[in-house]
Length: 235
Ligand SMILES: O=C(O)CCCC[C@@H]1SC[C@@H]2NC(=O)N[C@@H]21
Image (cartoon, rainbow, N blue to C red):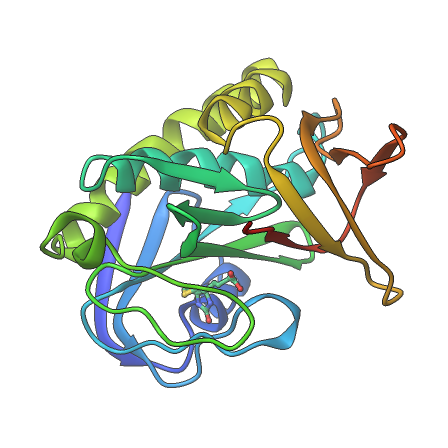
């Protein structure tokens, strides 16, 4: 495990992609104190002032590895475990978010570069942005003070290495089991915005063996979702 910190960069995912291209080994993590052009999922920007965690690593895919998309669950479990040391009551939300209460606390961005996967983690420790599309929160708002980003990175790198080992050695099943144990409760009301523009609402019923999301619709039918933006429905 090697942890590096820089004061400022555009995006740690871009830097990690360049490091991967240059031959960097698995186990390397790069953290920036701030990012000038942090990126979120689906082309969104990730506002990155000092005080929060912005960190990326890489995984080199091997012949017998489980499907690369399932690294999102490895990372989600690791990030949840790392952040839970600093604030209670966190929950995973499909596909890549960590919630504090009903608000987004952290997100994960996976990007494929050839035989490598670049994995970026952004966690609101000290600050959280005001977003029109969803509520957000930070560890400081939940626990009264912000943890040191380096301490969080340490915990994250350790947990990630442990779960990556299990993913390689035992497959996706134990990772998905742990992910579901750390997720919001079954029966949570969710709204899904699908890539074709369709919106559906239903109750969370867990994950399929391949990591797809199961929703129970109001008419009793089950819907399996492979790609969507998911929102908690507040009553
Ligand atoms: O949209 C999301 O929820 C994913 C956010 C991922 C942000 C992190 S911060 C570190 C890494 N570098 C980036 O530019 N993005 C990721």
